Image 1 (cartoon, rainbow, N blue to C red):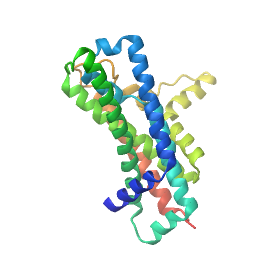
Image 2 (tube, rainbow, N blue to C red):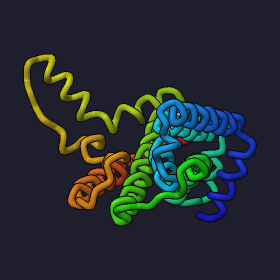
Image 3 (cartoon, helix red, strand yellow):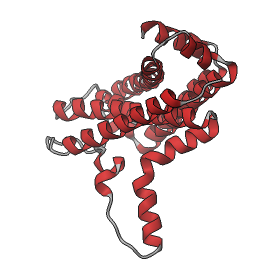
Image 4 (cartoon, rainbow, N blue to C red):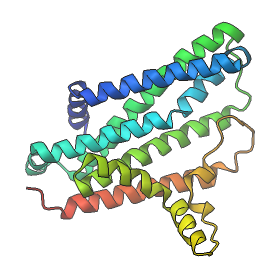
Length: 245
């Protein structure tokens, strides 16, 4: 597993797409700083809260990393690397999980560094501030990590299915939103069904409204773990029965 992760890190260093994602992340940070300065966010928000808010944000950056993930898998098929990995007897489960862990960790590290920059800027204006509800923030971080890993995992699974980066990331974005899509289709034929209990967006805690009510995290963690488990299960089944040439 460690060797696989090291291999993926080496691959990222040589991947121009990865540096494109980093550039996009920097652009996101600049826009965030600009919005904060226009809205007075740096004057009214403590450094710690700014750090956490930035760490929790960046969904568009996450989508870019999903495309990076799908491209890594598609390139592994195109170059024959996937065939070599399977032929060397490397467990498919380890390969799958190593990709998810490596890219998820890279994204979270980028967002953490962005959060530190935002925290320093906000802290220079209004101080570090305090965290009123540490347990809430701690669980929110866990939820964010699961959220990221679930989306990266769907990108891996769909790229394995299609062996194409673009279609892989599109399907990877669609699958977690199937409840919303079904609601729209059923609403079109005048059938009203509430699938909110299956929506990630319904259970994901707000990053702007910290409270000491931790009861919302149980359904949130269950739904996120469920999506992650389903994605990994489907991806491994596809790898197991796939004819790799």
